[in-house]
Every structure is written in C-alpha cells, then in structure tokens.
Image 1 (spheres, rainbow, N blue to C red):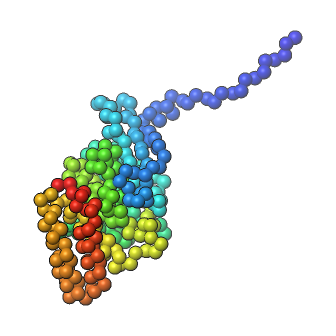
Image 2 (cartoon, rainbow, N blue to C red; image 1 turned 180 degrees about the vertical axis):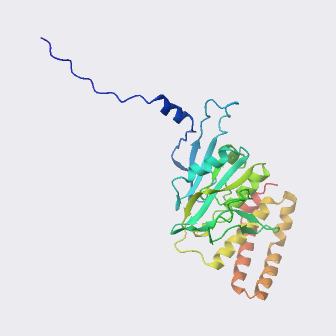
Image 3 (cartoon, rainbow, N blue to C red; image 1 turned 90 degrees about the vertical axis):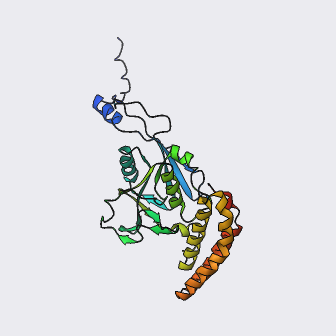
Length: 289
C-alpha cells in the first residue's frame, strides 16, 4: 500500500487584487544606483536617477520617454529625511511646468534651523540668499516659486538637465544652484521650493573638500569669484572683452570702497577674484551668449 504523497512546499500566496491595484495607483521609482552627475563639482555631488512610470487608467497619452525621469542631486554629506523624496515628487507631480524642486536645507543638530531655502540675485548679479541660518517658523512656506534653489537635495527633470547642460564646472563651491536655476528659468521652466521636504546639510558649499570651515574672508572671495564667472558666462560675446578690461579697475575701485567701509580684510579677496577671473581660461570660454 502506497504511503501518502509527500507535501509540496507551500507557495507564497499571490498578491491580492486590491494590493495590485494599490501598487498600480502609485508611481514607481527605480533607483539605478548613485552616480556622479555630468558637470558635477569635483565628484562631491552625486545624483540618483529616478524614473516614474505612467499610471494606467489616467486620461491622456503616456509621457514621452524621459519626460518623467528625474535626477536627485545629493552631496556626500547630505542626509535626506525618509520622506524627502516623496515630498519632492508629490510637488512636481501636479505641476508639469516645474523642472527643479528643492527642499529645506536644515541643520543636522537642529531641524528647526534653516540653512538654505531659495536663492536669488541682485540687479548687479550678486547672490542673495532668501534664507540663511534662520529659525523655521513656516514664514517662507507660502511662496514656492523662486529664481533658484541650492543643489543639495534638489531634483531636476532629466530632459531639462540635458538641455541646459547640467551644472557649470566653473562653479565648484558657490552659485551652482543659482546658475542652474537661471538657465532653467530662461529655458521656460519653473523652479520651486518644497516646504515638506527636508535635507540635512552639514557644511556650506564653500567648505566642501576643505579640512576646516572657510573663514568669512575666504567666503567673500569665493562669492566674488563666482559672481565674476557668471558675469562672463552670461555676457554676449561682444561684451566679454569689455568685461575683461574692466576687471582690475573695478577691483581697485571696490577695494577703495571696502577700505572706506572699514573692511580691509575684504580687499585681498577683491584683487584675487579679479585675477582669477581674468586669467582663468574656463570663464570666457564658457560664455553662452
């Protein structure tokens, strides 16, 4: 008499119809691993390539290949909150005109303190931080559209990133986000900040790859150098020689103003920034016209 048939290993239950519907109802994210973004700053900035699939059942055509792909820009010392990416993608999902979205950059030891949350510039091209080391009381949450955001933790639409040629390698430690935002806005897209997304930023961009934090004097020099770089890049080709010839006279004039304002420590930075802009071949060579 034959014995009982051996029991087959139990197969895992197939997912329920409700679970399948729930999965289809959300955009799926596919991370292809961290990789250095094209045009990054010395390899310190990394990006994660994300693809969002078209949701079945939504009226209209499926987006073209690449239309729903995003790059997530993260520095080595950036620490996103667990829901940061979800908040960023939720903000851009309802706004197809948005090409760049940036989170609140907060202090690692005190998330109530904002390190950065939007950037603009003055009429003369100087960088103006909309938020710089302030207590977060939701005072900036109502205004989302800005000229630019810091690159730390920002997401960028992949097609737009390729169109504007990514980050400017001539801005390795300052104004990278401002320059990217300007070019994205000129291309007809929007740049927004997302209050619900938070990313810890341990160091200022000027301190990346430095053993010690940059002094106020060094930060002023870096800021001025970046401003002059952008001036050359944004200038029409015919105006570049005029900008070049005015570098040293303008540096001397600004140095006199610094002395009259009793800021002698800023004078070396003015002269150094002018010489760097005058003899750095990458500055006029990147002019976009």
